[in-house]
Length: 436
Image 1 (cartoon, one colour):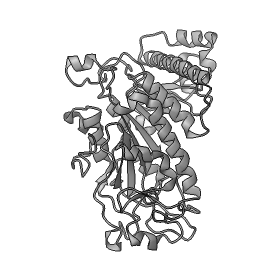
Image 2 (cartoon, one colour; image 1 turned 45 degrees about the vertical axis):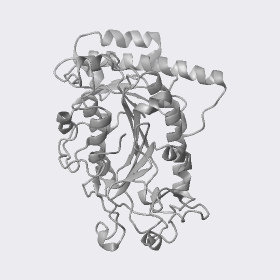
Image 3 (cartoon, one colour; image 1 turned 90 degrees about the vertical axis):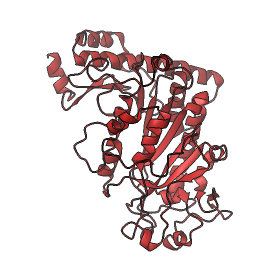
């Protein structure tokens, strides 16, 4: 079987991107017909030559996006406990007022935090955690698939966008000698990181650092000879292999150090966030991280301060706190953004849950976040203020937050923002001061 036949057989040659297999523990993505490291689509560099010479030094900005797939109930994450409308609309699922059993943790006197998120309170108190309420995508789709796609491409309502906004952001970062500038946790490259730039991924859980078939010398030699040419596919494969070797070396070293300390990682999300934090701390050339967490489509038995939602928020909070801790000093230069495709209905349904809604809350966690603040313009919960009479309205486009972070944190020139969010032109919408 010829190489091109093999690629077609494996289903890897279609579309605008080619997926380069690296066994079960990683892959790289490069554009079809383009080199992943050279040619007309090479990343743009920002700043002066002196600034570019220091990329990778301490102080290098990083960003991690955590996507809560399924539409988390933002009204039970950051609770408007000062509004009686909230309690009237949610008689069985509203989080109790501060001071009551399983009550919300007061933040501002009007807003409070779900009690399952208590592990994040030290960051709020230290001014490193903030929220943007009544935020989301301007597109009105209530389809999980469509809404996630729009939020990941950064072009709401546009079905034809072929790449993700994080991949476009990566294309605006400075040149790097590392094959790993963007890293995603999961078995495949998510929509948000699909595109022209090379992206590394690793599986989640305890098996992520285990060697696979591609690591065996005989297999590696076969693939090396197969992809020894100067064509784009071969170059992309070699970039992917280099990325995998670099990640495996980092993980092997850090995992051994962990074992020597005798401390086992907790079950669940913290396994992955600890690994991601250590990798980004150990190699500042890894600028972007992404992971997705499912299970937020709470149509029934949602619960209030306890129950199903609380059971999912608790390990999420622990996982985020673990990520912040494992980043170490790099946390000061990292912004962790938590997003979800849309919110839930304002009123609870007949099954003790909520249905697909609109406005939601974005989370911002990081050393240079201007925290202890609920950003955004709060629209209120009166019937006249609700979207279609049923949902929290959206007053802050999620792209306003991401554009602010791209420009002010990741140091992307203002002139390049239109390449990252090509349809967004309406300004920063109440979030221009979210960074110190």
